[in-house]
Each structure stands twice: as structure tokens, then as C-alpha cells.
Image (cartoon, rainbow, N blue to C red; front, side):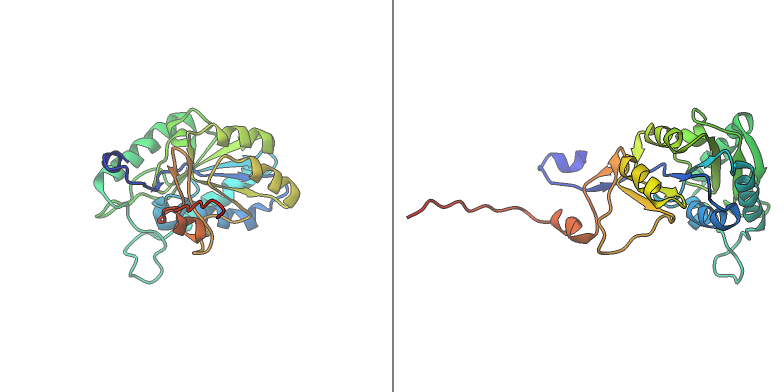
Length: 241
């Protein structure tokens, strides 16, 4: 943005995110956990719109944590070209060390129930990590980790989760998971993010605009709205003869 300002060039920026998944009462943990896990750990968490924090209703909290931990323990790390590998390494040493630091902090803020550190062998591999009994105020919850670690926060209800999710300075994406679609739509309409998914996460399409709110960016990509970012309005205003 600073580089473009001198010549008044317009910019669109898709920046970081701290996407929250709000999982309401009534979800079946065995059914929902694999979808949450996939949304959080795709590309080992190195996706701008990956789930970075999960807010789970107290009635299913324990079961959801258990299911997520099982999935993390079952993940296969290695070279993505090898058959059966499900997660690869972090992209660089700086990010690798940052994520390890966040995990180390989380040990005093919550309880690690899967993973918890680097994997054996060569490369920037971190075991997929699930942290429970953690809450807002921890670095792992408040910051974008951009790596294979997911904090799971217990909530009383959707309003409790929404207020926590919206407290972030980021607003790229988020998701609501509920059997009650009316309740999900109500929460989605009040989630302060560029995109909200319901009962799914991180689905993009070329005809659907995508952009962030707050510190997650300005402008849009994709869709007609994204094309409009590359145009200049030209108005001709003529008086009657």
C-alpha cells in the first residue's frame, strides 16, 4: 500500500486471518470433527483462510476434543509425493520456530492432547497439535499461527462464541457449524469477516467474491466484484439540447 500511494495506484490486499469455527450444540463430533480438522490442517495449516481457532459448545466439547486428537495422531507426515502422506512440512525456518514458540506458550495456557512439538527426522515438520482448556488471551488463540496447531475453546452458546470471534483485529473468514440453519444464518450475518461459511469452511469459487475485513485486507478478488477492482469508472453527464 505504501509503494502504491506515491502514484495513487489503487490496491487490493488479501492479508492474514485468524478464522474462527463456531461449533454449536447438536453437532455430532464424529461427523463434524473430520471437517474441522480438514479446514484447520490443510497444507499443514499454512492457508490464509484455514481454521485457526475452534469455539466448541460445552455440551460436546470433550467429545470434539477427543475426535480431533485422534485425527491428529493418525496424520502421516512426510514428502507429499509419497503415497499415504497427509501432511507436509512448514515452508521456512522462521515460521517453524514461531509455531514451536506458540506451542511452548500454550503448554502453560492449556492442555496439549495431541502432537506438541517437532517431528523426528530432517525438515521443518511439526506434529499436528490439538490444545484444549485454553481461552482468549493466549497467544495461540489471539495470533495467527499459520501452522499445524489448533486451539479448541469451550463456549456457553453462540453469542458467547460470536463476541470472542469478533474481538479479533482480523476478519478474513469464519464458519458456523449447526443443525439449526436459522440460528447459523443469524450468527453468520453478525460475524465480522469477509466470508462466512455454514457447515463447511474454505470453499472458494471463481464467481464468488473474496476479501477480508478489518486488518485482513481491503477490496475483493474473484467474481464480478473482483473484476471491478481493475476498472476505472468514467461518467459522461450531458445537458439536454
